[in-house]
Image: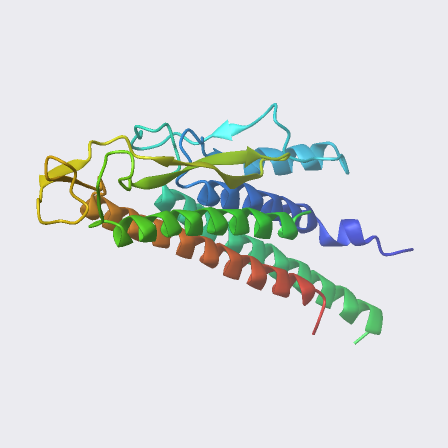
Length: 119
Length: 134
């Protein structure tokens, strides 16, 4: 009997990676706050995680054929759809979620360590 | 996986915003400069931003160009001014100080937001490094 780390960590390892990917997309939105014509993008976290679980260890990265564009509350004259408050909120939430996934992984690793030490 | 990419995205935005702050500073500094002819007069400058689309949803910012404003210059009759032309007219800049000040606030806010992003990335990366400890 061997310990399979992938099974032991469950969904959290995938979630952590997707959270990091999403951070990049949100950071790009924030960076392009004042770029004319830039359209804010986002990813559907739930769908991507489900996809990743369904395809097992399939390569899953953000591809250009499935971009999701944010619908702005107030359209602006220069075509930029970044609303900084929305992006900041999403970024903050996303990084908290990242920390949550990290905490879960840490808890599971501690559990494994306990099992290995037999305490 | 790219924490490095994120830093580069935020860094490109900070660079672009500081170019913007630079043009604002030079516009405000030259707001009251008079010139002897229309060609010599200072015109308000403004950077043009464009996004650099990378793969996987990343997009940094670049400054495509710095363009001069096409607003009309202020033509003032000042015969005593040593720069005045034959008709005693001088040409003042077309800098709009109020809109420059508003632009300055917007630019420095945008800069700060990206600094915050960098700080958050750093703390995320550090907690990732502590994975499995204790």
